[in-house]
Amino acid sequence: MIPSSVKYDGGYEFDPKIVFRCRRDVPIPISWIRLSFIVKNTSFDVDWHLKKWIDENLFGNYIINSQFGFDGTKVSIGFEDTNDAVMFRLLDGENAWQTENTVF
Image (cartoon, rainbow, N blue to C red; front, side, top):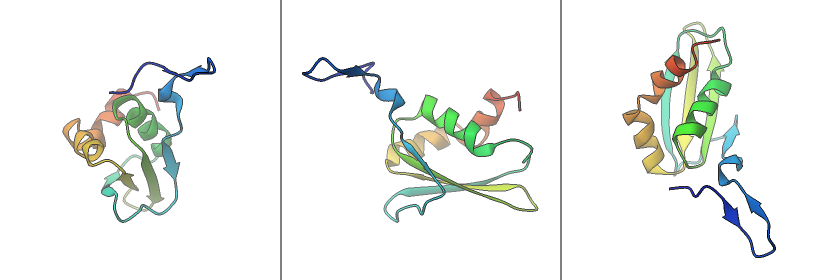
């Protein structure tokens, strides 16, 4: 569980949820868990909406790579933590981020 704030001795306090956890368009390390799926509708920014959903629902570091094709956008996500990959599947992350972001 991520705490609501982190304090340092010097009095500095920050929200740990704003820490940059996503990298885009870089190779996924071989030790990370990789999930791939195709998004049929490509009339919106897949990466932005998916990143927003993952940041709100999961906690670890991840990498998003997407490739546009004739069948749609192929999305590959690499999760550093196995639990995040499992939770992505259990929460139906492949579809849930689309239904929560209905305004494209």
